[in-house]
Length: 230
Image (cartoon, rainbow, N blue to C red; front, side, top):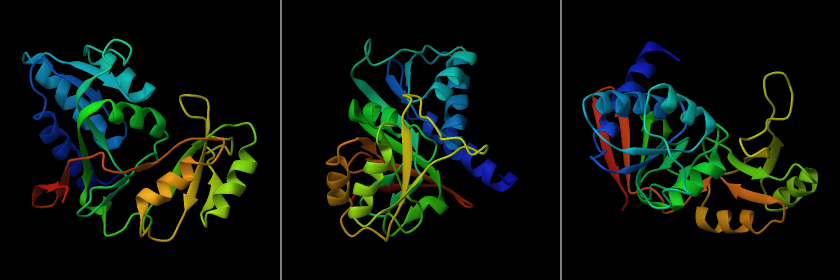
């Protein structure tokens, strides 16, 4: 990560942390930009802000605990006031998202579905005219029979590739599942694509987040721009 990119992510993470109010239950997102947001929330907590964090991944949970934040789960707090999370693609106008290149998409979507509000944070490179023109769609699937699931995804016109780590080993999510990264042409109807993917047996969830985010904070060289859903 370049120094400029890191500075932009830190800037948007700090601004996102200002949205948290005293007494809130907050979904703590996953990824490089969300990491800066969690750092900024820890600084606000040291200044007296009281809130409870519900992490979307083991990585975010470990970071929050190391910083001394009050961490809980959905069993204790099934209703979340605000979730702040990163995104891999943000569709201009609709704020439809692609998420999951970090591998936490299932937990991220569960937390998002339990949230009254969802705000996404990213740098300007993540804003696109159409989903699919930049990032593949991550699809979390059962390890049993994943080859059959991949074939059914291919039947939809997607180009699935099983995710592997740097050593070439199959990547496992926090839930012990596999991820198929599905390349695609720009999506004319992301909601229909999400529906068809979720209709395949063996699929747990996909990285299309439709009508979830109401606000995007986008870091640019001139500052942080706010995009709202049209």
